[in-house]
Image (cartoon, rainbow, N blue to C red):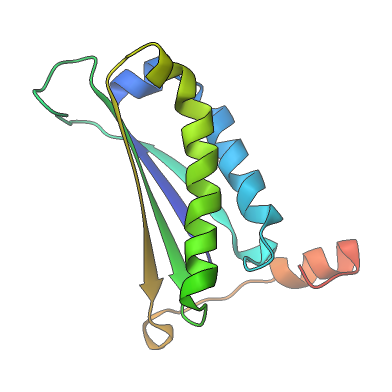
Length: 134
């Protein structure tokens, strides 16, 4: 973990370079000491159907859900959210400056360790590749 899921609607998909945003968010996550690089998954999802506000076609949204394994304290989780949200707000600032309708959101969800199953060799491969713990 973490898994960073970016949900957005068609208005935003047409207005912004979502591949670039996803890359920026992934880079940010990799820079955070609290997040092991081998566990980071960053995905974008264009919603098939959505209504925002009054339903006008130009109303856009981006909503990020960060799913983390248990064990990080509140300060660390807040820092993760603050850092990733800062990347999102910086990336979308021109949209806000142009007064185009957009709603941003981010939430962190903690996954209970007893209810997740994993098998991953990426951590070891990265450790071997870079001779470090990340």
